[in-house]
Length: 327
Image (cartoon, rainbow, N blue to C red; front, side, top):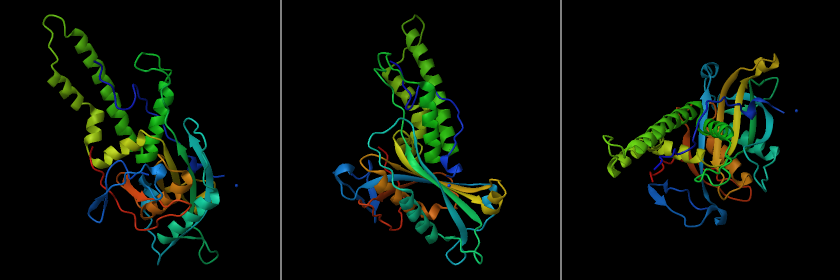
């Protein structure tokens, strides 16, 4: 019996390039949602729910230059200009995808930034100190083609590895992606060792792998251990194993940009589960939910569960951090 990895059969460390760096001129969630101390369930699939719950993640990275700046407030705002880097789709194409317009994305982004102490420049009295470059889109996963169990898969390992690593970094940042890679690499080695042990188990003098021993090896799988390390980690890994819609907002030093130098201050990455919902419904909601995290560093990606009001409207209530329940 072959022990199989949770994600892929091989991994490779690859750099991640975000589109935001290049500007251009309903069912309830899988787990119960805690609201007001109670768990709320919905039996309707998200596609049939008028106002479904969706799972989101928000992650902000601060550079050393960004950490030197005081967080803005409505009474002491930071002024900015916004530039669009446009819509981007990564991974295999998805049929019938209708992205929201630039105008709709920027409108929600500006409103949300304003509530967090970031205001559009009003020269000469309030000149911009930041350039906020934003992009939005879809990151879909690469799937094996054919019968993988019978050795007939046409899966491109390198493409799958790159696809997974980029989506992991988009959802949870580089450190999270690195942990996922390392866990998979170790799991691959352990799987090969276990295959060798099973092949030799029938020989005289070889140890016998009992069902208990097999269960122990499965439990010790480093990918499974990473998954079990926290509810937040489990949710991030589940999101990484699915298609996600995303918005990326990156803040740069305005004066440096005017001199053709890019000094990144902070970058906020927002992702949301695509199952049963459209980009038009969910991307405004994920921007609103990410508001308190703009320009404020997070140790790890924050998992949120948010109700989305369809037909272009957004529930703009205070986002609630939800601790997912282990399966």
